Image (tube, rainbow, N blue to C red; front, top):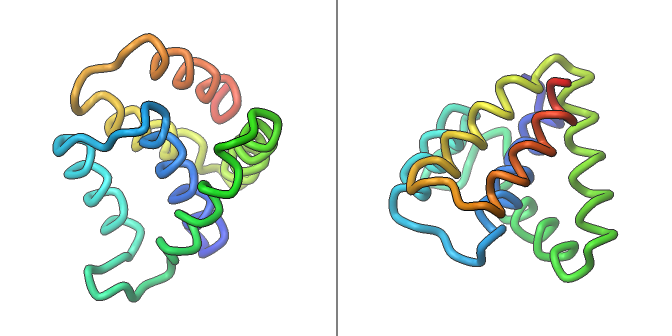
Length: 117
């Protein structure tokens, strides 16, 4: 996965965990595994910039239209590069780490259509 796709995936991961405005310990553990698999390390080095990803997500979550545009652009990039299934799998694992509520299920269903369908 190239750097642009890895960054887009991290941004989607952060968007997903931001759905309910809380990050549980089980979600955090899976999120960390996903980040490490993308080359991130606790020292902050690697191909993905988690600070940039967090800032990008923070900039759009206050506006539904901006969030939708953000989601669609990242999903399009990942699907087009052949990484849709990987992205969907990681997001599903993170959200499923503590059980999937109705809002998360709706998000996953939409994301599945964007990344795979």
